[in-house]
Figure 1 (cartoon, rainbow, N blue to C red):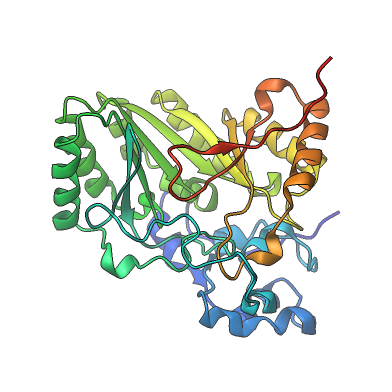
Figure 2 (figure 1 turned 45 degrees about the vertical axis):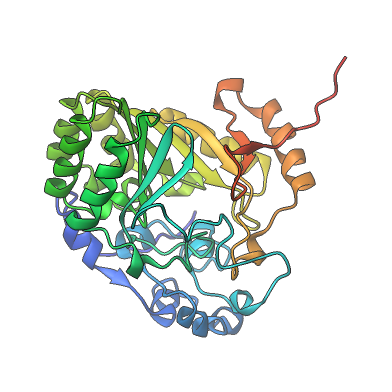
Length: 342
């Protein structure tokens, strides 16, 4: 039986308190998990200079005590491998650091991506925006208004994507203001929100936020970012139930990560956990080649093999699409699974 860390976390209603109750020290994180004697883990502590460590205690509570290979720990702990300069990896793998206006990326024809907030509840070590110049793309009302003016002037747009950082780091009243402005632009039909907060701190899905989504004239979609079934708990399932009741379409995207979920049965468990929570598996991405994350890389051939096996383990509607994002391309690029044709 796994021994889970017991931590005193605030009530599920107080997401801001949980957001503030974070671990930023690798030593403290390892001590909480009874891993402070693992020299190979301690050796990576200096990587926090490259990209700060940040993990809410509410998320640490789902990590297995005494397990250096815990899949949630591996996503968040600094490691020495982050110092490796890998060929083909860069600080801007998706060519995003030239926005059309501050904080707005118009990468695809009919949709634009608004960087609502630069911060995140948890710093994932594989993050493709770990080097992004958020200081030049501040999420504030002045920059939002410039972005909204651009959106209003481009009738080819029918969908806006809230991203970041994490867009749900914005307060409810800020999101209300943004949604209200978008509702006033006739050609905008859909709002898609990409966030890791609902899985890291499920209390972020407040009754007020769900109610605002429910009364919106826009179609609201939430794309969760979840990589392993161990992340899913009862609080998350309850949060998703609130959103389903509000009419929000619930999806998930994952990243295929070596040592975390590079196994068909692990992905099958994830798909089942997601579907049980009312969330549809949507995409699984091969790793974006961001400097500092090469140790997570799974080759295309390995990815295809894993996905072909996954097809045999779960129903077809529970198999996410394997894809890669390539900077400058007009859409995501699906990876052909090279299935045999009769």
